Each structure stands twice: as C-alpha cells, then as structure tokens.
Length: 340
Image (cartoon, rainbow, N blue to C red; front, side, top):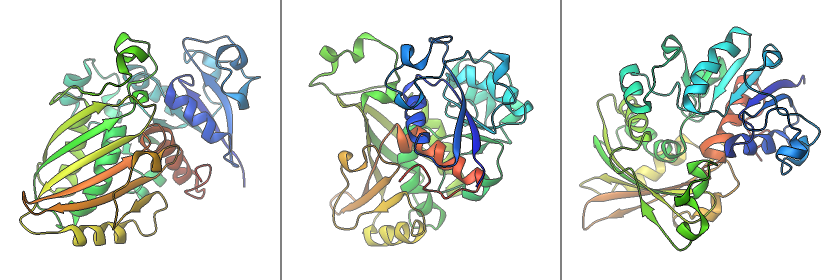
C-alpha cells in the first residue's frame, strides 16, 4: 500500500506532538514537513528533543512557501485564526486538510465571529467542511477534503448523546454536562494559574455559561434531535496531565438506563473506539493514552435523571487520535492503523 504524505503545522503544541508520536507507528504515513512558529529554523533535536522519531528534522515556518504541494494531507494544530488562514492555501495546493482548531466547526458565521472574536477569512469553506466526529460522520469524512476536527469536550459529550437523540430514546431538549479536564486541555502556553504551586491539590470550575465549546455541542445535538437543543455546560480543571470525565444529566420520568445502554451498544457495535460499560462506570485512567471513549450510565430514581459518564483522553480521542482516525477514513486505511 502506498504511503500517504502528511504535513503537520503547529508540531510543538500538545496536539501536534501527540499526533507525531501516533504517526511514528503508522505503517502507511510519512511526515514530509513540520512547522513551529516558535522554533522555526531549529532542528527537532535542538527545539523539541522529546520527539525522538524526528530528531534529524528541521522545523519550518507555516509561512514557508516550500511546504505547499508536498503533502497529501495536512494537519493544522494552530490557533484558530491561523488555521482559518492556512486551510485554503493548502486546499489550493491540492492537499486535504484536517483542522484541529475550531476555525471550521461552527456553521453560523455570525455566532462563530462573536465567540472567537475575529473576522473569518474564508467563510465560504465552512459549509463544505465536515465535522470530524469519526463515529457519527464516517461516510462524509471518507469523501471530505476539509475536516473540522471536534473539540475535546464536545467529543466526550456528543458520542453518548447523539445516538440516543437520533432514535428518540431520550426526548429532552435541555441537558446538563459537567466535565473535568486535565491541564493539557488548556494548551502549552505558560501562564501563572497553571503553575504547579497553583494547581497542585486544587480543582475549579471556569467559563460557566460562556465556554466556546458550548455552541459547538448545542449545534450537533440540535442536528441529532431535529430541533433546537440547549445544554448547561460547566468545565472544570483537574491537577492531572490528561483526560476528561464528563457527567451528563438527562431528565427522564422512567428508568431508561438499560434501553439507553442497549442502543449505544448496538450503535457502536462495529466501531473500534467506543466501549460501553453495563455494570460499572468508567474511570479516567482507563482511557489515558488511548483513542477510546468509555461510556457508562446509571438512573437516579429519586430525581428522575439518567446520568451518563463518558471518559476520553483529551489529547488523543479529543484531538490527535481522532484526527488520525479521520485520516485513516479519508485514505482508505484500517480505522485502527496507528491507534491500537
């Protein structure tokens, strides 16, 4: 089988680095360029020696004209505005693009610009972008040229809810999701609130009602339900490296636990990266360093809520692993190549 040539823009952020480590064990992918704005012109050995499989490479700038036309697929692990500008350049050069930023996720351009605070340079590409939730939009991803890779929080919330909304197992149009994430979800920038002395033995909520992932979640839930859906979303930061545990509350007058788990088992039966637990609830450590979403549920009879627990690794299933899964789908490879 011929190898697919890939380029990675933003190779020294957490998602880019995780992606490089996954691609290193992919039998049919060859990295043809790496970019890093902070380390352009330096070797990987000098700039990021933890990337042991690429030590003889040199980081380029994403503005370097030599990178265009080299790759079959380009991963954009860049800030949102930088990705919005870069995607059309690579598409014009003949590459397919998998964008790990939010630049092409939100379909309502007015809403997008209100959330992300910049004027989108290529709004005409948004309608043609495929939302890269691998298990839900599988066939569209196979045919896509531009993938909007989902956010980490949305991935863990959408995968358990979408099948249940689509078939009417749950009928609510108002959900609560309470998500706890490791520090890597905030990116690699050095800021005081993420210093060890600030985070050690600490735990806090942030951006209640204003987190940028909430409209993304609501958009996809509304599509699945066929009607407008609202979600109360409260993210928290844990003093750990990686992982997201989401607790999702679904109002239901009757105990639908078994029905919901039956539906999820049936929906994901032939999909390698979603595992449903019937008799226990998944834990963060079980998903660490994997591309799995682990799902369990209980019904609270006192309050009338189905409580769903969904666990992912934010850097793999919530970012780099899902991006590689999408590359496999686009390229006709086994879905698990480089991921198991």
